[in-house]
Every structure is written in C-alpha cells, then in structure tokens.
Length: 113
Image (cartoon, rainbow, N blue to C red; front, side, top):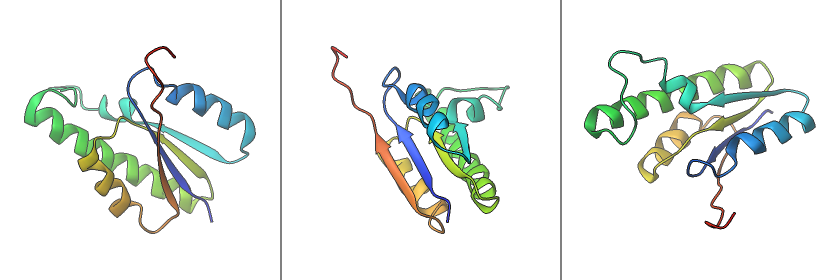
C-alpha cells in the first residue's frame, strides 16, 4: 500500500530539496506543495499567519492537500506533501489520512545551515 509523508519545517528548511531527491529514488511519487494549493484561493488570499482568515485558509489548504493525497494513494502513488504545519494542523492531517500509512517529518536545520 502506498504511503503519505507530510514534510514540514520553516521556510528554507529544505522541503523542496528533499522532494527533488526523493523523485529521483521513487518510481511512483506525487508531490503536493501546500503553498501551491493555498494559492488557489485568489481573492482574498491570506497567508497562514494573517489572522483568522489566514488560519481558516490554511485549514482549507490542509483539507485539500489530504483530498489530493487520498486520490493519489488510491491510484497507487506514494505521496509527499510539503507544508508548514502548526501543531494544531497535525491532528487534521492524521485524521484526514488515517486510512493510509502516514508519517509527519519535521525538518529543523540549525540557523547556521
């Protein structure tokens, strides 16, 4: 059975770099970039840190990420989701993806890196 990995960490932590390397190693991998999914909301677009509206759009983005992930897994793809995940959204990912093996990996490089 295919699995889902949610790769999180602050901006510049290396999420996209890891995604590029994994695509070289895995035959059936779909990559979902949470930023791209959230930017589908154009008007009014709010960043996750922009108050209640931003938090609501971030939650919607997580739900959409999960919907896409379920679709890809059912088609036989492993899924890598790139997203900045706050602690309160971890439970959303776990609940929405509970039908599949799901791992949440946090990249936390030192400031020097």
